[in-house]
Amino acid sequence: MGDEPAAKVTDPALLAAMAAGDDMRPVSVLIEVDVPAPRVGFREEPGSGRRVPAEVLAPTPEEQEAIDATTAAAGRFLEEVLGGPPVWLEAANAFVAATTGSQLQEIARSRLVKAIHPNRRLGA
Image (tube, rainbow, N blue to C red; front, side):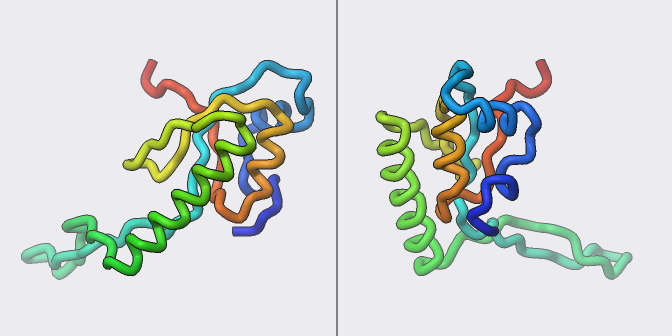
């Protein structure tokens, strides 16, 4: 994915926050780290011949090392930009942070970041 902020931030409210710079209150966001998606193992469904997802495969040691290095670098970068440590959500490969529009702009330009999403409560 490119380092162009518009490619990483598609939510209209976050785009407005970025345009406002530091003139808006900080917004809570999920910052998705640019690591490979988990691999899925398949099995053949009896009787149909179709292949269906069966399990999420663990990363190889080399893949895990690369994931860990990218995540650590992203954490250091975000701590520098935010002035404090963000919260890491391992299952989502994402950090949670409250950011200003200017911080969002800087974060969205990083090659370590895959996407930025609003941090919203789902199902409420």
